[in-house]
Length: 416
Image 1 (tube, rainbow, N blue to C red):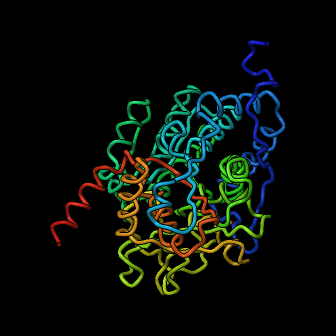
Image 2 (image 1 turned 135 degrees about the vertical axis):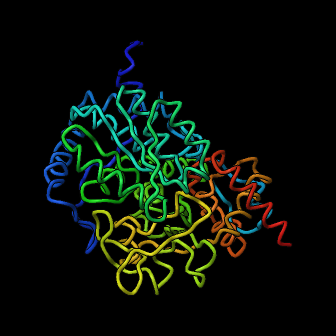
């Protein structure tokens, strides 16, 4: 057998989509300063070339296997399913990917794209820190300079990931403007990109932003659903009844949904952050609050955005930093409008309860983002038949959230 690591006979090679979609119905598009239009056009051209370059594709798929650790498995949550009664719950284990979340799939792909474009400096935004860690890891692997923008609120609640980024050689730049969370980190990253557009690649972390970013991120994350579809059929002999994923910007959800879009018997369910409840106004549920969530433009794309009556961007809240964002990916807006996917919300308390339940029944600490999807499965499973299947995307692991969880549980006990 050949010892060549690129030998095609042994190469891990999922058939990822490559198409670029400028608009999803009415949503998407490019709403950026004129100075960025040539950069976006160059990115689109470079991505198309990347998809046709056999050498780069071999390298990408080899690294997905040997560096990221793909394919990630599917686990049957037997004890959780028994505890709840009703449907059988299966978990797509993106928490087992290198760096602890699905973010590495996209970060690695875009980092290779940046290198192919001759860019030696990458910048990124991050909320929960998982995209920042993934970008820093990919940059270290490929010898790229890396700067990550992060709101000071998120820096305070995600210290483990800040330390990981710095140990990986990235510079973490605190953002103290606005709400000091993900939206403001994106703003600063865009400012940097405008200033340094000739030398810098903006490695966007979710299925957001101006075209072609939503498509590029979706295509790299589609590996989640491609693997999951094959794995669930192999393990159970059929497709799931429902696929559930948390939705901040929406990259893990769109990655899972992609492989099931044409299976109309499979319900696609996105779970937003309900924060302290819809009535409180302190949440990040763009679709679930008709008073605040409506179509608008934010950070380069036309999509659903939380905004006040004057069109100003509303403050958001979630116990999970990765879901604490005012806009949602434009493809999700389209899926909701067409009825192919449905979107609900889970509040902070329910996410915490799901975090504890999964830990105590399955020995898995989920990211607080992922705990929102688990909570929705907890809510749905008891009303379903035992022969039905819920497939939940466990988008990340919860190491980064232990301090937040500990404080929240302590506060809850003190109030009782």
